[in-house]
Every structure is written in structure tokens, then in C-alpha cells.
Amino acid sequence: MVGGICGTLGVYIILRGMSYIGHGMSHAVFGGAVVSYIININLYIGAALWGFLSAFLINEISRRNKIKADAAIGVVTTAGFAVGVLLISTTRSFTRNFEAMLFGNILGITDQDLLMIVGASAVTVLFVLLAHKRLMFTLFDKETAKTYGVKVELVELMFSLVLATVVIASMSAIGVTLLAATIVAPAISARMLTNNFQKMIIASATIGSITAFAGMYASFYLDSASGATIVLFGAAAFGISALYAFFKRKYHMHSHAGLVHAHPHTHTAEHRHEHKL
Image 1: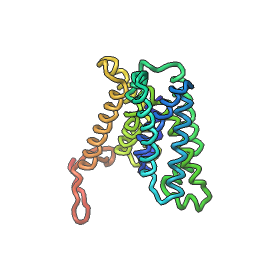
Image 2 (image 1 turned 60 degrees about the horizontal axis):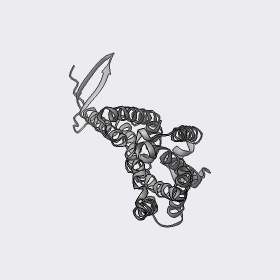
Image 3 (image 1 turned 45 degrees about the vertical axis):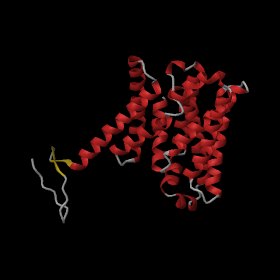
Image 4 (image 1 turned 90 degrees about the vertical axis):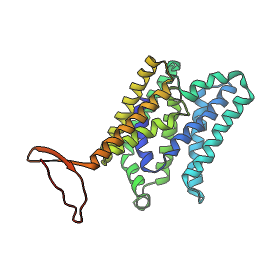
């Protein structure tokens, strides 16, 4: 579920050119989680409040000031992570408790964590289905979307809040330091395979699910960190996709009268193909 929902949101993120937001948001919620631990409240409450506040601040700063979103992400989210590190360094008695949150520990998943993952998955699917057209309009042509009455700022804020929810739900399984790759890797792998948006969503969610599943089981047999192993499987998927895209560009494959064949895709002045059966 974590791999699937991260892969789904990752498509929107890479097409918006905001790959850094996944990395930043995962770091931001860490500070809230540490504060929750110190004041002895539920970890998810602090992480959620911190993540939602960070998402709101990023949108407001980039909208009201002449600052691009990536700069706002860099300042707000890094500050949140720094707060968590500062509190851990001054109260060393519970340092080990946050190792799983930083690097992921599939064996540390509780029933509460699982319910959170299920809830985040449901929210993500519902949001994508209900706001699909508005998301696409905002993604590809923000100014025209405003002209047609789409509340672009609200759509972007809602997307950031949903992303924060997914990050919070995934941090125990993957780890905040590795979560960004889980969001981006399936999406860029899918982008290598197709230019069709719908197919890209399906491919990214599928790649995310498969790499998470394979990485989880491999970590059991290798006795390795689950988060790191899942991320490495995601990187391998990207490598395979990039290799496929390279050969697809180099060798143009199509069919004539049911006969499939391939030939080198060379460019001449008139862009002619030489067909070799």
C-alpha cells in the first residue's frame, strides 16, 4: 500500500517539477514526531500537525512572495527536521527510539501504523479520483485553470495536505530519510515507459507496489534495513526503465500487416526509415 500510494502521488510531483517536496515533507514531520514524544502525546498527532503546518506555510510563502516553491520547501521543511535533531541531541535518552523512523523498520509496524497506512491509502485514492480533472488542469496550465474558475491555490494546498498524510503514514515503514526516493523513483520509472498520463499513473503505482513488496521480502532474507532495501529496488526499477527507453529510442519497433520488426532509428535530412525484415 505504501509503495502504491507513494507511486501515485509521485507522478503529479515529478510533472510539477517539485520532486524536492517529497524529500522536504518527510523531513518536516520528523520534528513534530519528536515533539510529540517529548510531551507524551500520540506520535501521529504531532507529526500530522507539523506536516500540515509545513504544507500550509510552503503554499502561502510561495504564493504571497516572490519566492519559488523549492526555496520555501528548503527552508520550512529543513527547519522542522532541525528541530527534531536538536531535541534528540539535547535529550539523548530516547535516541534509539527514532532510528526506525529515520531509516525504516518493517518489524516495528504496529496495528495503529497499519490503520494509518490504510486510511492514507483511502484518502489518496479518493482525492485523486474526485480532483483528477482539477489536478491535471492545475498541473499543465495553471493560468488557464484560474481563468476557467479552478481554485488553483486550494487544489495545491489539498494536494500538499494529502502528501503530508501519506508521508506521515509511511515514515515508520520506509523512514523519513529514504521516503523521498520511494515517492520519486516509481514515477520517473513510469515516465520512461510511457507518455500517456493515465498509463503513467497505473505504471507508477504498480512499480511502487512491486518494489516495496520485493524490497520488504528481500530485506527479510538479507537481514537488511527494509527502507533501504525497498529504495534500492526502486532505483533498480528506474535503471531498467532507463535502459528500456534507451533501446526504444535506438531501435524503432513497429509492425506491418501483423509482422513485428525492429530497425535502427536513424535520422536523415528527410527523416526517412530503412526497413529491414
